[in-house]
Amino acid sequence: MATNKVFVLDTNKKPLNPVHPGYARRLLKQGKAAVFRRYPFTIILKHPVDKAPEPLRIKIDSGSKKTGIAILNDAEGEVVFAAEIEHRGELIKARLKDRRDVRRNRRKRKTRYRPPRFLNRRRKEGWLPPSLLSRVFNIETWVRSFMRIAPIQAISLELAKFDTQKMGDPEISGVEYQKGTLAGFEAWEYLLEKWGRRCAYCGKDDVPLEKDHIVSRSRGGSDRVSNLIVSCRKCNQRKGDKLVEEFLKNKPKVLERIKSQVKAPLRDVAAIHSTRWTIFNKLKEFGLPLEIGSGGLTKFNRTQRGLPKAHWLDAACVGYSTPEKLKVDEINPLQIKATGHGNRQMCLVNRFGFPRSRAKQSKIVHGFQTGDMVRAEVPDGKKAGVHVGCVAIKSSGYFKINTSHGKVDGVNHEYCRLLHRVDGYQYSSS
Image: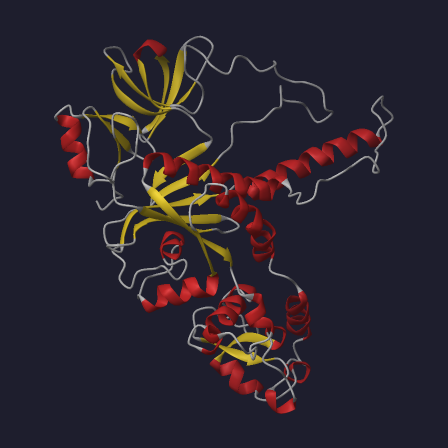
C-alpha cells in the first residue's frame, strides 16, 4: 500500500531526509536503526551521518473541523508526508454547554450555592473560546512536532478561506492578480460553501451549478456576493430576470429560507477568520519564513494541477510557492483525531447531582495509562498469542486491550510492552 515516507533522526536526534518505508525497514532489520516514534513513524540511526538534509516546507490548510498538513520538497515537487487533523471544537462546545446547564440548574434550586454573577468577568484582548483555541493549539503542537523530526525550513499557511476584499468589490483596481484567472475562484468558492454546493431553488446537488443574481443585472443588480446565489441551469433559465419574490411566489418557505441564508454568515468561515491571526502569530514565533495564501488561490492551484478535493491535497496547494508539478502518487495521509487527555470530573453523578461512583483512581498503573498503545505477548492460557492495541488500565494489574480483532480482557501487565504513549490523539490510515 502506498504510504508516507519515514522520518529519520541521527544519533543526536537531529532530523535527516525522510526515507522510503522499504529502506527504513531494511535499516531496522540490519540493526542500524531503532524505532523512535510510532506516530508519525520515525526511526533513529545508531551511527553518525555527515550528509546535510534537503530543506522541506510544511504547508497548512486550516479548517474549522479538519486541518490538512503536507510536507513538501519544493525543489522536486514531492509530497513526502501528509496528514489530516480532526479537531474537537464541537465536542468542547457541547461539554461546556452541558456544564453550564448543570450550573444554572443548580443555582435555580434553593441550595447553598452562590447566586449567579455577571459583572465579575474580564477577558483579555484577543480572547478566544476554548472550542476555537483548541484548533490553534492542535496546529501549533503538530508544526512543532514535525519540526523536531523533519528538516523544515519554511511554512505556508492558508490564512483565509476567501479574499473578502476581492469579493466585496470585484472591480477594485490597482491589484494585478485580481484581473486574471484567479479572480472568480474566490467568490465562487465562497458561494459554494455558503449554499451547501446545491441549487438554492430546487435543492439538487448532483447537477452542474451556476451563479445567479438575486436582483438581475438588467434591473440594476450588482456583482457583489450579497447579490449572488447558486442555482442549477434549469432554475437559472426559468428565473431569467424575474425578482426572486416573483419567481418563488408559490414557494414561500423556500423564499424565506433564501432570504435568511443570504444574510447569515458562514459559521465555519467565521471560526476560521476568528483564529487565523492567532495561528499566524503562533507560527511566526517559530522564526521560519512564513508564506500566506487564500482558499481561492488554493483551489486555483489544485484545479490547475488536476488534483481531487482532499484536505491534505489542499494543504499541498497552499500559496504561490506551489511547484508546477506535484508528486502525490504514493501518499496515504495519516488521520489524526484530537481526543484530549480525559476530563476533570472526579466521579459520575445521578440526575440529582449526587455522586454515584467512586472517585478517580490513579491515572498510571505499573507504568501504563489508558490509551497507551501496547504489544502483549501472552505465552499460554485462554488469551495466548500476540495482542496489539490500545490499553485500558485496571488497578488490579490485569488490563483490557482493544485490538483490531476485538477486545481482550484480563491481560497481565507483565506481558505488555509500550509502543506509543497516549498523547491526546488517535491515529489511523485512510
